[in-house]
Amino acid sequence: MDAGLVAAADVCQVASARFAPAVCPRLVVKIGSSLLVDAGGNVRRDWLASVAADVAVRRRTGQAVVIVTSGAIALGARRLGLAKGGRASLDDAQAAAATGQIVLAAAYAELLGKHGLQAAQILLTLDDLDDRRRYLNVAATLDRLLALGAVPVVNENDSVATQEIRFGDNDRLSARVAPAAQAGGVILLSDVAGLYTADPRRDASARLLADVPSIDAAVEAMAGGTTGVGTGGMAAKVAAAKLAVAAGIPLAIADGRGDHPLAAFAATGIGTVFAATVGAPARKAWLAGRAVVAGQIIVDAGAATALAEGRSLLAAGVTAVEGGFVRGDLVAVVGPAGPIARGLIAYDAAEAGLIAGHRNDAQAALLGYAPRAALIHRDQMVLL
Picture 1 (cartoon, helix red, strand yellow):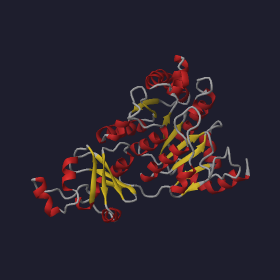
Picture 2 (cartoon, helix red, strand yellow; picture 1 turned 90 degrees about the horizontal axis):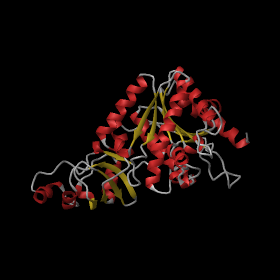
Picture 3 (spheres, helix red, strand yellow; picture 1 turned 135 degrees about the vertical axis):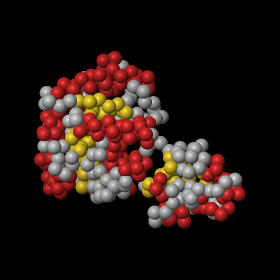
Picture 4 (cartoon, helix red, strand yellow; picture 1 turned 180 degrees about the horizontal axis):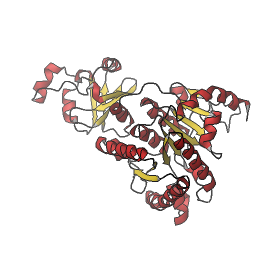
């Protein structure tokens, strides 16, 4: 082990304890394709068996585990003889996912079953977590499965997802699943040790960041691109971390390349932990995590300041309305410096445009009825 990793481990040992069963009763663990699937398109069974053993140990010590797994497309592509790992076209990816998901589920069921654990498959689309009613259904299912001692194995439903409506990677899916599962932590098992100050493959001076107290532009700039057979990368992992910590859930990137990666992370502390303090209330955490917005509300500097102070968005501070949204849709609020909030809009786009820039006392004449208290109420809005 090099000196940089040893120093990082010293700093991160305390941080990694945030994911221990005693303080984290429910944990989400993400496994990517690059770890799970070998070059020949087969499950790395010995490695996965070691992960199942780690999960069994945690389960016996009182920690419920949700696994978010990739690998269906990579596994299915080999069995169907598809080019480019099954990603040459959307049709190929959907066919590969449908084929590979059976192989994937069988592997988890068998290897977890050897430890007396029952695997339970959950396939999700973006709409399942963006729609409030369906999100609550997912949360209820996860809660019941965990209470029964099962290990939910979650994946994106790639056989029906489209390029326009999808999570895009399972790092962000993990961060979205975590609050639904009432998890106290997320561990992303990766093919690198964590987030470095630069790409360690190209820069010998790159330093592993053990603990990230906040995610700013400098941290985001350190993230690299996509590698391996999966669709994620360090940028996706940092984006996932932003979602998780916004919900008050710490997230770790840990080296998953060796056997028993969860045990290794607990023992050495090597990895990157993104700290979380008090998160948003459950409904606001759901709002922050939603991926698709129906439009944008452009506001002036005064309105941006008011929102930062915790106030509702009033029409008087709106300078432009973009999109074809309807009342109740999720919209982005954009100030002079960029996106500042998301919220559920109280008006259709046409009405919002009609009253934009007008004070409340002038809105009744424009609308033909008494205006609502705010364009977006603060209880229906989350700051970014």
